[in-house]
Image 1 (cartoon, helix red, strand yellow):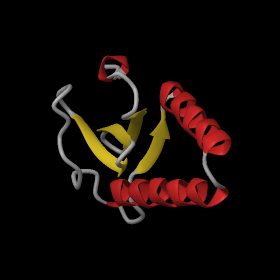
Image 2 (cartoon, helix red, strand yellow):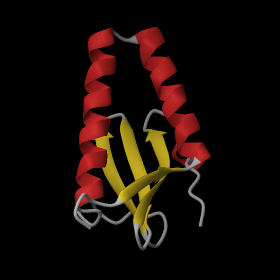
Image 3 (cartoon, rainbow, N blue to C red):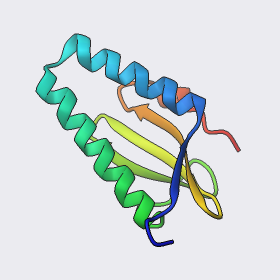
Length: 102
């Protein structure tokens, strides 16, 4: 694909993203929010161009994990013509809260 794979977000991942943004807005500076946004955009661009770049997740078959920051992991699955973002998980949470759909 010339421009890379299409990126699709699940409702669950969008909900998690909203929660992270709200947390950063309430507890951190605008600069830190911009840094997170930049890192997220950069990681998604890398995934779009080369979805096999990041490691396989130990959690489920066919799911990969990209580290956005020391506090946040992005979990995704490669589809034939797209990449589906499944979760944007804050590592400050209990790992048992991580939900990845089959």
